[in-house]
Length: 263
Image (tube, rainbow, N blue to C red; front, side):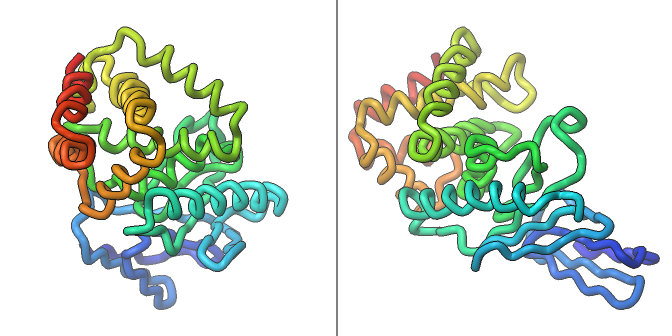
C-alpha cells in the first residue's frame, strides 16, 4: 500500500511498520509498505523521545515517561530477546527491536500488541510476563490467527514460560498455576477459532499448557530443539507442527499430542 498524509503537525513523530518506508517532506508524509499486511499502522505522538538504550533496541515514548521506567523495561526486553534468541531463535534471531510506549494505561486500554519486531505497549506493562509474551510473537506471526490462533498465542505463552522460569521464577509458578486453572473445562484447542464460543481460554491458556505438558514428556532440551526446527522451517500451522513433532519424536508422541488438541 501507499498512504499520503498532508498537514502533519510539527512537533509530532510518526511510527509505522518496521519494514515500511516513511518519507517526510515538510508537512507531507508518504508511507509505503512493500509487503502484504492486514492493516495500515500509523501511530503518532507529540514531543516523543527516541532512546537507543542498546545496540539493537530502540524506545519511543512521551517525554513524561521517566528514565527509570525506560531502563527497567529495557532490561527485561534485552534479557528476554537474548535468552530467546539463544534458546530457540538462532535460525531467525531478533536483530533489531522497537518498543513504542503509548500514553494510555492498562485501565483505559488493557492490552498490548506486537507487529513483527516492534511492540506497542505502555509503561504499566513493565514485567517479564507481558513483555516476553509480545517479544515471542516475533516467531509466530505467520500463523492464521483467525482459524488457528493457538499457533500464535499459545506458542508465545510457552516462550513466556521459559523466560519467567529463567528470570522471574516466583511469578513463573503463579502464572503457570493460573494458566492450568483457566485451561480446565474449556473447548478443544483444535476447535478454537478466533470467534468460537469460549475460544480465548482454549487458544490462549489451554494450548500453552499442552505445550508445557509436551515439554514435561520429552524434556526441555528436546522441546527447545523442536521449536528451533519449527522456526528454521517456518512452521505456522498445526499440521506443520505435528509433522515436525513426528519427525523429531516419533509417530506415537505426535499422535498423542494431536489427540490432546481435540480433547
